[in-house]
Image: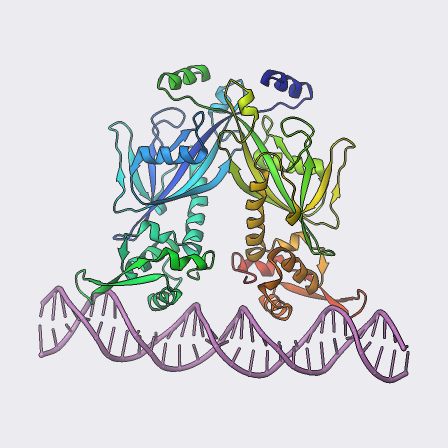
Amino acid sequence: MSRTQRKIAHLLKGEALADFRVGVDNAIFSVDTALNRLLVLLVMRQEEPFLGQWSLPGTLVRQGESLENAAYRILAEKIRVRNLYLEQLYTFGGPNRDPREADDNYGVRYLSVSYFALVRYAEAELIADGVSGIAWYPLDQLPQLAFDHNTILEYGHCRLKNKLEYSPVAFDVLPEVFTLSDLFQLYTTVLGENFSDYSNFRSRLLKLGFLRDTGIKASRGAGRPASLYRFDAEAFAPLKDKPLVFI
Amino acid sequence: MSRTQRKIAHLLKGEALADFRVGVDNAIFSVDTALNRLLVLLVMRQEEPFLGQWSLPGTLVRQGESLENAAYRILAEKIRVRNLYLEQLYTFGGPNRDPREADDNYGVRYLSVSYFALVRYAEAELIADGVSGIAWYPLDQLPQLAFDHNTILEYGHCRLKNKLEYSPVAFDVLPEVFTLSDLFQLYTTVLGENFSDYSNFRSRLLKLGFLRDTGIKASRGAGRPASLYRFDAEAFAPLKDKPLVFI
DNA sequence: GTCTTTTTTGTCTGTCAGACGCAAATCTTC
DNA sequence: GAAGATTTGCGTCTGACAGACAAAAAAGAC
C-alpha cells in the first residue's frame, strides 16, 4: 500500500492523520561556580516566527539523522566544549504550539523533542557567527522565550536537580581534578543553599568512596590549601542509582 | 514564506529535512496481586508491517489531537478502566526503526512517543473486537515484539520501579480501601522480594502518616483479619518526591 | 606575631532501616 | 472445644547515618 493509499484509507475512515515536522530543542545548562550562578544558553531567533526573541537552540531533524544526533549537532553549532552530558528531556507536541501550524492550511504539526544538556562552563566557548545573538542567561533572570521554551526550561531545571542528586553528572562538568569546595558550590548553586552542611556533605561524599585524593594541594588566596580530588568511575559503578546527597 | 518555499530553501542549503509520521505507543502495566505477576498489555498486529506479531497498543496521531490525548484514546480503545495513571515515557525516533520508511521512497520517518500507564488489574476489562488479539502478558515471559517495542518495555519497567519508589502511584491502582498486605504484595511483585521486610515496610508506611485506618476489618481465609486502610492525598502532599520505600 | 579565612577532622544526638521475636485474632483440623 | 496453623499487628535491639556543631590545621592578610 502506498503512502497516498494509506492516507486515503484513513481519511475514508474519518481519521485525519497529522503530518509532522519534528524539531529538537536543547536546554543547555552550565554552572558558573565563580559567581554561583546557574546559566542556560539562549539564542536570538533570526527568522519568523518569534523573530528577534530569545529561544532555546533548536533545529529541525534531517533525513537519516537520529534525534540524539540532531541534538548534538545543534549543540556543536552553538558551543565548543569537550565535556558534556546530554539526554532526552521530554516531547512537546500539542497542537497550536507553533504558530506556523496556523499559516499552513495543509495542517502540518510541529513537534519538539527537547534534550537536556550540562556543559563545563569554564571551557565552553560560544560560537558567535556574527549574525545571531547567543548568550548565557541566569536561570532566575529569563526573558520571555519563543514558543513554549519557558516550559521546557522548567522541565529541564527539575531534571537537573534530580540528576545531580542521583547521578554523578557533576563530575562531567567539573575539571579533571577539583576540590571538595568546588563540588559543594556546584551542588549549592543548583540545589539551593539549604540542603546540607559543608562538613556533612564532605564526609558523606568521602565515605561513599569514589573520590580519590591526588595528594596535590590547591591554594587559592587566603585559607588552608585544599586537596585536589579525582572522580573514580569504577569505584562509583556499584553505587549507580543510589542517592549521592539528600535534599 | 510558504512551506514549499521553506523546503526548497533548506534543500538548496543541502539540508534535507525529514517528514514525520508520529505514533503513540503505550506501555500499559498492571499487577495481578493474586498471582503476584507483573503484566503488560499486548495486542496482535492486524496489518503490515509485523502482521501477526504481538506489539504495544499504538496509534498514529490525528490532526488537532495532542500526544497525551492520543495515548488516552488508544488506551480507551483497548481497555475499560476507571482508575489509571499515565505519563509520557520516552521518544524513539531513530531512522530505520520502522520498515515502512524503506518502502517509501519519499523518505517519511516514523517516530514513536511512548507513554507509560498503570491500571487497576481487578477492574480492567479488555476490549476484544472479535478480530484483533489482545492479552495480558507476564513481563518475564514476553514474546518477540514488533518494532522496538521490547526496548520500550524495558524503559517502562524502569520507570515503573522508580514511580513506585517515589510516588503514590500504587494508590491509583489499589482499590479505594486495601490492607497493608495488599500494598506490600504490590510492592514486592514490582520491586522484587528483597527490598524490605513486611514488618518494617508496614511501620515505615504507617509512620509517614498518609494512611487512614478505616477501622473495618477484612477477613480473607485463615489468619487474623487485617485493617482496611485508605490513602489520604492531602496528608501525602508535603511528602511529594520523598522516597516512600528504600530498595 | 596576630588575625582572618578556608579546609579538615572530629563529637554528639536523634532518627531510622534492617533483623528479629512475640502477641493477637482468626481459620482449620482433630 | 482444644490444639495447631496462618496471618496480622506491634514490639525490641543494634548499627549506620544525617544534621548540628565545635575545634584544630594551614595558609594568606595586616
